[in-house]
Length: 265
Image (cartoon, rainbow, N blue to C red; front, side, top):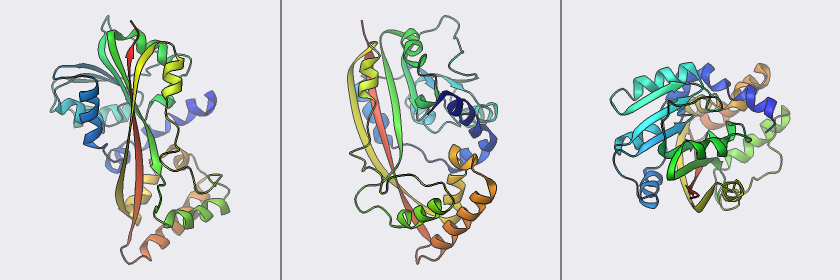
């Protein structure tokens, strides 16, 4: 993603903050169990979360007793996050861009980002994360998204044709399998700032009705930015195809890839 596109698209989520809170799924609990086990983390671990959204990945950390500072670019997203996380007195949400945000002389045990790392300035993110960590601190990144394992729901092949017809195709079809999706190990090690990299993969599913699936699509930057006439045509086709099924649902696979690395001494 180019700098201009990244700078434009990363602001789109704040336009649909309430829908984002409603439609975006939570992450697998096993991911957080593994994070704590691999990192030997415990209650009152100090965490800087980058791009918390409305708190989908924040809650599992807060429930485990972490002391969290969350930095969220979107004002509306941050406002909803504060409401969602108000029951956790050890969680604070700052509205700011991580690229320019500076804490008042605080360092953290863990810098954490769930599906937000790619929105940060590549020339800044590793250096800044390292600078904000305590000696021996941890960087944890969650990447991933829609996954297409063997036997994925055939509806996605059908609607791929709809995307192609409006000039919004995804390129090569079918996409790579979950095992083929690249991780960030090389980039983390290539930064020269982190070592002892661990990578874990989690494949999981959510079933959607036509309406809940369209709600989800409306939280993706690509669909938010799409020409309205194209989007309306696409959504009408998707709704018709899901509603025509006996179940009235579509099953979507998600892949979450956890990366954890320790700050070099």
